[in-house]
Image: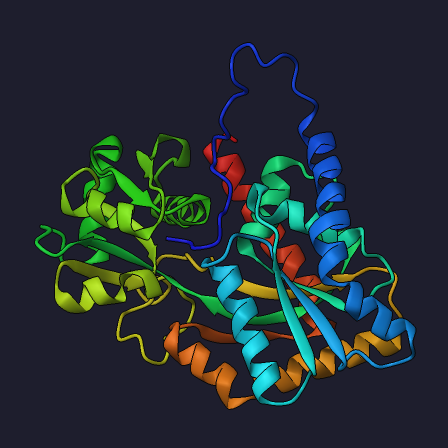
Length: 347
């Protein structure tokens, strides 16, 4: 159940009587500009002033979390902040939360900081999906993509007393009665994972009975009260319920086995389902190669610290480092996959 506010697959309609709403792309662009002038402008004033005075990027840095406090992006940003402080990597690291529209409001804000290398942003699968789903006027092509640092894996779970003992058992029943196996998850990322499993299993994605839940707790309740029979869930959100026996895990969504997760992977079981909830790092466009090199060094030192490695362990993340040279190829491949899944959903 993805923690970072990915957009709903079916966005709510405008309220009746509200008049003609502005086009979505225009609205996002305007709102993003307002946020940039407010929250970002205030929070990064010291950073920008410091850099203008000739100091390097280790003096002061702002990390944008493109969601409210407490979500997955926020957790990654604050874990990075703590690691930089404890390791003496950056003198003053601030975290700014800019929620809304699956992260595209924050992305627009980052793009408006063109030329200011003192601002980084945590991104990820949900953000890329939101730019595609919403047709965002600002995309990852409008910023400097620095790399991927970690990923979070989903698990396929059923209630602890479920009749299904394996993923094959679940899939066979699903194929016989697609609508009779209601699925749940915490947001559109989890729905994309279910859709990829449907494709791999030969089930039509648009026919899947998917009940979107508002976060991990609600999705778990849907499983336990019988509203749903299966779910795609972030492993960190489900591990306690799995260990208690209230949920039964059938597979981890991954290409290769993951250290610390004693489950077969979807690929090992014959299902080409590999979509993960990765976390990426981005900076504004228009910064120099020297500034890019400084930021890459800061990120590399951060993810090598004991504090960051402890966060990886504590939050059950998996290390997935995609460097600057490979990141654009990686993002292009992920975008192609996500577009195909939305097409399968008929969105």
